Image (cartoon, rainbow, N blue to C red; front, top):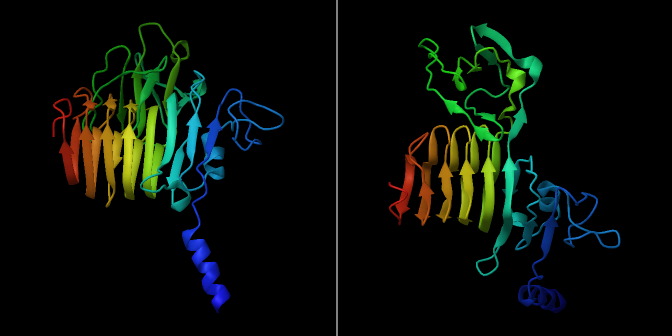
Length: 297
């Protein structure tokens, strides 16, 4: 018994394992590596994907993402204790200005003629959508399924009755444009985590949300994110989550720049929530505190 008590005391007062940096580089990395080095050295080096880095990560680690100029075409999910931190040692994702993208090219054969210069394409996910040209969202027209199709102008689009309708310029074909749609559902999901900091990422082109903290994401801080051009919202917080949005730029999203639901607690500081394609803040529940005039309540 005395030995068991001694062993328990040693475990209780043993210092926590030091935090590690896990490096990601989608140009020079390899998912066979453990991510312990930022460059390939002697059979080790950065991971190629963020998903691989998260499989290697443990409580309080830091995932360091290289901005290679090539988007990371991934859905990133943090969940549970291994993707959490401590009050004095948070779990960190350092984006370094890299981009997460949910886009996929529209297959040329998927377009079909509809009427005149209007063509259509049925995406696999239909509730919310985005249509991009040359890496930027195209102008979207509001459309109601019970109403007629809007009168689209050249290079305008809408989502109507489960399909994307797009008007080409006179005499043009869809294949003449570099068109992409929102293929992946959510860029960054935070679920049942604590003490997490996510910094310096561009998150765009996801079918639902750029960032989603649907429930039990406590003491999460989002710093310097640019969440743009996503189908529903740039940042969605729900359930009992507690999230701080600091120095973020959120705009060009479909239904809301920031969306809150449930019993969440959201602090918005020093952030720009654009009032362009959707309201800056759509509040369907929760407590929201805004500490700067650029993000009206």
